[in-house]
Image (cartoon, rainbow, N blue to C red; front, side, top):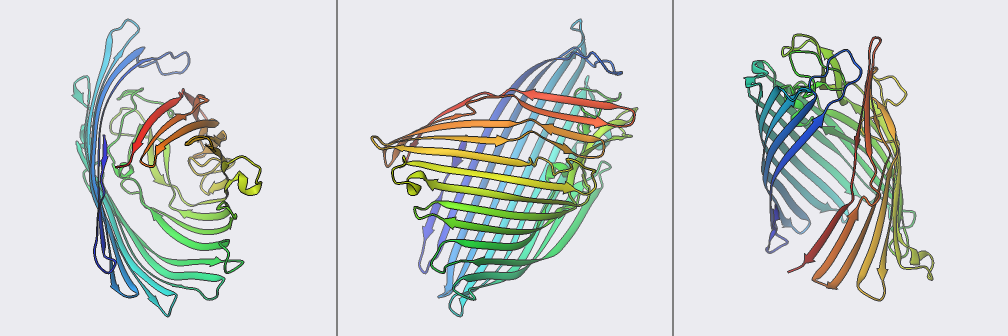
Length: 498
């Protein structure tokens, strides 16, 4: 169940208050059966078949607010904030059997997570000397996580040396001031300075707290040039710097054991244990963007955007063979790490227009299309394919919408394409992603301004989604491939405005 509301109050002199509560409740149950067939490998198969039953509950409550007030004729104050809490509980019971259906192992995993989040932003803007503006503000946001987890193997607790309770937190602070002005009728610009700091903390396996604090001074430079003062066409240029904090899940140091290879024995790199890293530092990116926007007479848009980002302290999950406390032999462990610097750059093209605006005798088709080319390089990993995680070399999207003239009905379709690609994560580890082609269609019946019916069909050409991984060392090669089937998703939605 999703429940949202909006409360708005308006006062004198431009004063306004908006409150937006939001509630999410969900419950799920899963039942899974698995059969394991192993024809190669030095390690014996850990089981012949397995059954898993799982239950999960999720709840989230959030309140967002915004307050605007005019302090003077040319001075405005805007305050935005939010407070939220989310709880997630998951319990999984897994039974493993040998070929004679004899019970070999029982894993009972019970976890509870409580997240608190809050943010508060204030902005003061004032007009001076006509069209010149001064903007200053402060931002604060934070997240806190408390996680409790117990894992039993055949009734005996695992990972007892780590305890059951772990905590992690991130906080971000920012102060900025900038000057906005129009030097000429064709140029507008703003420049300023921003200070941003991030603090992260997380419990280590021995119970001690690791805390990292970093900050950066960021220049703010943005300019817009119009070929003609009265035209909407414009060239935008900007220089930015930004922080990205590690996720709370990456800061939790408690390991998660591979379900396929039980302890205290060994595992393989394609089925590693997983462990967080409370010593992670935030990523810092410095970027340059140049974009040109051309507006068509009928309201269409043609745009091109070039960008480049230099990233330091890149966070990536790396699998290595480690001597661990929860096993008698070394095991493969996947752990997020700061692996150094990276560079990413790309070109993004977009077009939105009505076909009849280009040719009067053309049908009333709304066309939307975009295409992107990406190139990236991680300095600490040898190429080729040493790109950023989950960044394909290209993407493309094409869509059409048609309004029937004889009745209040709209038809639409959309095609999205991502090519197959390989990412070299380290000198010995790589992942591959298969080609992805998604076709969607929709129909909208408008009965009145307050009543409409929408039918949506997603993934009309369902195809398998393929993910692969490989580990190549001097003595061992381990490869795996996961093929996930997809299906058509139908949705019928009645929209009523009160």
